[in-house]
Image 1 (cartoon, rainbow, N blue to C red):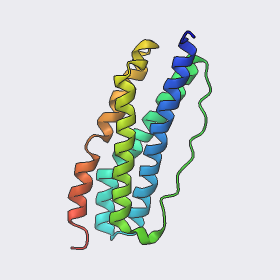
Image 2: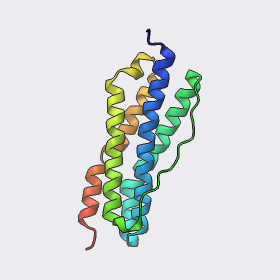
Image 3: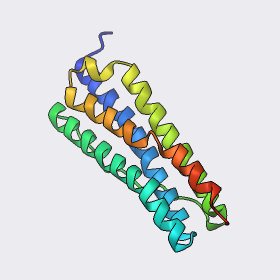
Image 4: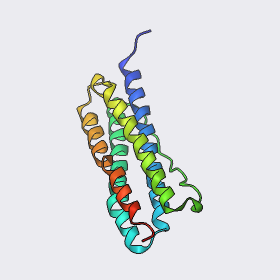
Length: 152
């Protein structure tokens, strides 16, 4: 059976949607962590973690919608994941966010490595994927640095 461009585009959209859901889960977890921190640490979390992840989420969703529009496909809504129960604690929520960001980055990396974006001939999407990965790139390190100061 022949693999069509339409199937490739749909596969690409689905893979990107999975990464977007992971980024959304990271946002939810970071929001829950924010609520449990003192004001100074919460502001630092917002600036160093939440902000870049939020920008990555917005850019990924915009890239998904734009590519779907160019390809004549639907771009559905993305549901926010529940971050978990408060007893997870700020560190647990940050760890969950880091894991979700890692999953999203892994999915985006696999998508780029698959050459699917090149096969469907969409330079804008390729650039957007690289940009989103760049935004997510430093999250783990910044999270670890933040976690070292928790409880001090």
